[in-house]
Amino acid sequence: MQRLQWGAVLFVVWLGLTNSLQIQEVLAGLLVVSAIVWLTIPKPAGGEHGQPWSLLNLLLYLPVFLKDLVLANIDVASRVLNPRLPINPGIVRIRTGLTAPYQRLMLANSITLTPGTVTLEMEGEDLYVHWIDVRTTDPDAAGETIKGNMERAIARI
Image 1 (cartoon, helix red, strand yellow):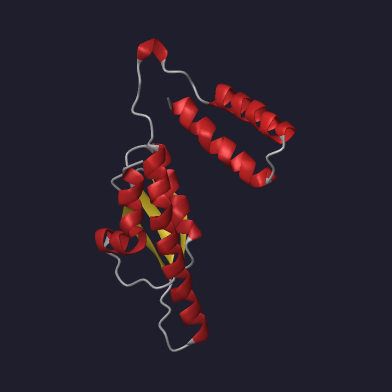
Image 2 (spheres, helix red, strand yellow):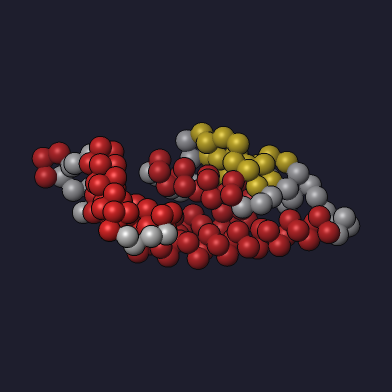
């Protein structure tokens, strides 16, 4: 099932990038996607079926990320346009409850993609983040402010 989900996502990306429904583009896309899925996604051994990620929850994560992205852009833009707004840059350590490496990586990349924050390092369940406005150095409070709903949405994937 996991191969089918990845294949569907990659094929949609292929169609978006080529912006064409011509038969040769569709067939090339199916061929490329099939090769990528076959070569990169291991088949479960001995009938073991790990819990596959949920395509629906991945799609439900996008609005959560986009909301945080827009709010971060507005915050940084307001700091640029109004120099009286505080800028207190620093590095904070935040903790994540995400256990799978791909989930922690997804959170770290999401934090980095939002303006005003950059993930510098991942060490176990801790992430070190450069933050444009350090309000607290408490890992739990800083984590809630920085990662907010993103972590909860990623945990459902």
